[in-house]
Length: 188
Length: 153
Image 1 (spheres, rainbow over the protein chains, first blue to last red):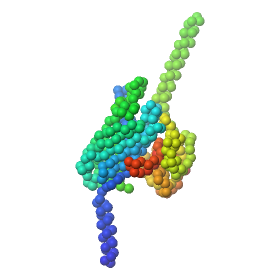
Image 2: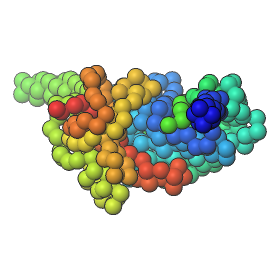
Image 3: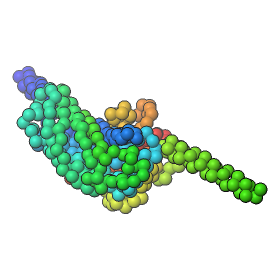
């Protein structure tokens, strides 16, 4: 009887700690949304990607997004073909893009407490085989055992070897494109 | 008389070229996306074989399966349902993966998939977007990505 209650109390303690202890360590998700948005007087162009893989390490502040470039979907099929082509993103030669960042103010983000935190992130963005440093901020929301990350920043296409000097792409694709990143993590 | 006839024919030719050019432009601009579901399947294989092919030689596999304009190969992949999730667009995502494999095949569906149970063997038709690989930064194996998927059986 004593033994049973001992085992029971251990089970109860471990159960309660597992519900109290919120997310920690490395989290992985495929629930992601990355959007490219370009606006010019000629037109607005939007592309959406829901197939990226991401990890975030709550202890080190490291975050990674791996983006399958051919998963970007455009409303117009022709734009999608242009986007993939070798004079734009050359997705056959460079099928994935990568965002690698580190939270620099990790002490201000409490993954163990519900809330929304403004994280400062520095890192590298690699598109079309070219890597450039980025410094952006991201909103991190902790709710129960779910962590959400969202961020919005601009990238200059020329930094990644994408430049149009004439024709329709030059007038219809913005030189600077807005990138929106959203991801949601849960412990597995 | 002769001269005016030439001018007339010339005018008709120019007009025809304008109409044809405009129509082609209009068609290109509004070109529909490829209908993956009814398009011909390029390769039939198992999830294991596809993953192995990529892990052994990603460059060769990309050369074989990816198209420069994004309309990459259409595959019918057979495998075991390992996981069923939903993406941010509300689409169902099924991971086909053998328990002994390092990576699987992630298939995003456009419509309903009905009831599927974990462990069931299914064949999925879809277009390949990216291959399987080991990512040293994330310290994990990434699945093959298939999009515009439908169930074959």
